[in-house]
Image: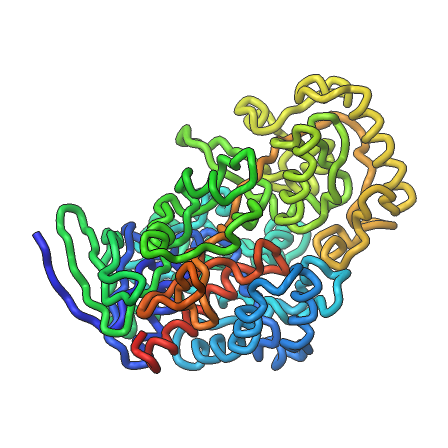
Length: 564
């Protein structure tokens, strides 16, 4: 059965880019329809940290943090080789603060400055230390009522007690809840709120990070009564490279033809679970693990390619923006992925080794750069997986992956195979299959660096990012400490993308380009369907979400002015 509908703008995908596009379209007076393949909003963004990289944003400036688009442009020019994407990056920098101000003034999509949050390559000209990162304000999921169930939850590894979200600032107060009256009261209030939530909801309603951003976008769409068709996939577009006039959608057995007077915006989340695209665009051997939403199968990219669109970057194998992950074992018998972003790797007392038992990276670099080093090392020595090595005191103090700080009994994690333990370094080497002599030499050399505070091999602790994520109370270097007394532990980490980098090439207004570099009228792409403007590089926190929101805004503004 076929149904027909006509709107100004059709948006495919209810992730951060798609919801932002639909929201802006509604605010601009356009008749918009948002279709979503799954039965929930949020996509991969719902499980993210929710940070946006927006140089020169006014929230940070009002808080007293000085920054400018000009400085950020110098930084990006130093970070990214060549001129590819420079025009888009300039458009992003010019429009970023405007887009955030627009949402903040007219919707419930509200942000606060992170303050100090260093760019990831702080040794380059123009790198920022303060002010470029913003995060969504926490959100009360109870405002959504029964529709709270429509917000895709965070990964279980990022919740405690089976469904309670905590932010980075909550962690020390929860761990130290018995160390002061203030901490105890703070923790008690969080627990009481969560227990009350569980009487009515399947998880806690105090939303943070990416979940807060998705809920704020969804709440704003509901306030404006923007229609959302759940369980409705984008099947194809109407038109060809000369112009797109709408799309055909599929909802179960029903086919819906939607004419789009001003075009179609592709925001289907990229190709995270499309193995053919992974093999084509990602490094070899093709990483098997992905943090993308399970429904992100490359629908938008495939449609663009069928129309003759080109991808960017077309070659180079830099198709992902990466983090190391460990494979978790959940209570229901399933497995999950824990992203090792910044809570363990930069802390003193941990080192990473390859299959030769040798260090291959500054463990405190950004998650993206850590995996890039894994790929580079793997060319000569098997480094997938790599191993994070530490002692019991480290796990108790800082945690390790899915093992929370304060954990003393590791028995369940050992039995599941999540962590490997041994009484000596030699025995640990045998358990993980690396040469015992080499691992002992690596540990001894690392411990000598810990004594002096100088990592001669990789410079751990020398950048602002390293020190920011290290332990400021540890001297002389907040990122290097001796392994210390046994028992010792190891955990395997693998590459996984937090977003794809390769996507459909666009112009600065997010119009999809054909093979000759000409815009395809009426067809836009943003989010992970759009090629990353960073050309495979990762400048700072929020590298994906910042451009997703900004180019969704630019796409709609172009469609409103020009009708596609």
